Length: 407
Image (cartoon, rainbow, N blue to C red; front, top):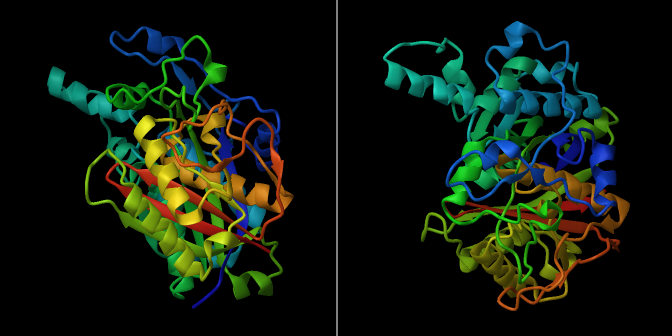
């Protein structure tokens, strides 16, 4: 089996649109949640707060021809991938088009705008604004396909549309593609654009935070006073590479992926199962050949919902006990859905390499119904560790766990 390392990273997030800016924002202990006035105009919608990306401009070299198949989610995915390839030194490398480079990428959904165009046809009985690219912008594989087309990759394409595990599952499947020898390089990650329909999805489930007047106080994962999640947006790409291939070309290496586990609950479409979540974490540990005590930090999914936080924390306590430090960056940027697994993987790696781990914002009194864990609260914590784990969970009972090793 081949070793798999990460040689490039790129992101677009509510904390910033480059690696350093976003990581430095973690040190400010301020979230990126704000009120969105348009949401107040929707009758029956309770949540009016989101965590949007700021100051992102479409690069001038993205021509009209290139953009015609991309909605906002694909534009962010392609740009994050472009900066990640540049970071890895592979943007113009011949391996990109050799058949040995593939794409594993996903989102919960495509772009919502063209969906309205199709629905308009049903109502008006006119084709109207629908064109040959409309479906391309909304199809489940829109991010993966647009990345492949833009960078002209000819290797494997592994699209992931598994809601909140889209990014992490893509990274895991990319890891397996290289580990098995099928590919040398994989462009992997996830993206999500902000749309009011996403807020409505969770609002109808009574899962969104309604602290509209105090956006800086929410979300508050694992806290006894938490009241739900906040929708965010963004994109994140990791360049995975076969170890010897990376070493031969003298690439810098951020981390090695040594463990990956995924499974499904098989019980309920939206209610998580702590037993299968725990099993997923153990699968990742088994893949890495590690004991729980080897993990120095756990990056938790931490949505801020009652059932989600309870199941995840209890599963974590079952596998690790209560001594492993843990936190979640969703308290900074909200729930970025298809992007969260990739964004949180990047931040996990950065925190591991810098020996400093951000706290869960707004966590002051851990809920007694959640697991008794070593929650990082208030201030960041200096930790020197060789291994970190990033866990994500999604509707449909889809669980993922990835272990990164410091190089």
